[in-house]
Image (cartoon, rainbow, N blue to C red; front, side, top):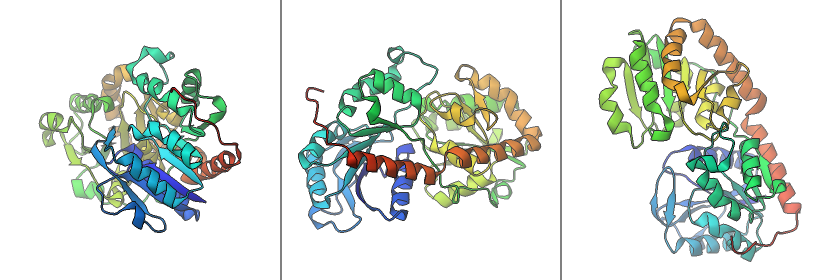
Length: 382
């Protein structure tokens, strides 16, 4: 199958990881994949060959959203005409192009699938009760015109359905992780950082990630000198937090780690992975840590609580993250047998529910279903 994938390659975020893992897996399954993404124009659409990397011009991009140039729509359209894909799959990038894609694909008679990533809080029962759902309200009228939309949980499906997206056009396919690559294994991390116990946060340093609650809990818990907290990632709050939570508290800031091998080494060397977010979708970082056999603690937001439920990890309440961590951190420090058991349970949960291979099989089945359906007509006035 020839697939035109529209997604992100930079800057590093969950959407980037999702696009990388899925497209690589599709290539492994012998599909042809062209990757269209916002980048500097190092090539031209008219010169593209097999399995091409297609740059779309942009004015600004961040981990959250992207502003394309006026030329981007034409570059995208011309590229799709040349690629002639069987199907277009957009890993939505919070860009104005997301809203134009249905009309472009209708004009070219191309089936169009979306993956809808925005974070959500499964404890919020009404769409209008939180500002985070403005994105759902904004996108729903346009997702009506996609042939299918992939979400990570049935709660997301219910919200989009209530906003007018046909239920039959919403597919629930949870994130998946490569359990061969992300697996328990040897690591020299503890030797490198002269630590007996290693705790890890990996992700953006941004307000919604609630990293300061973890840092304050760590500081207040007065952890032993042999315990170290590694903070992996970059973001808007890093420069504000790092001066107040430094090496004097056995907190080590590693910044953004580009090497996947290094990130895997960090996870393999960790005893505990902590994700204190206030909102999430389904965290790939969490699944990667679980797949490496690390004991995990995460807040009950998005689908993360569902991933850890029934003993696969510790689920934190967003209203009392700091107080819970202040109690749990010393417990996990002093009882390695507990973290070993939770790590084994975490790995088993991923093997049962969240493998990349299972994700790809579901995706291939969805592609086949979409290709067999009559092409839908754009609903104007969205």
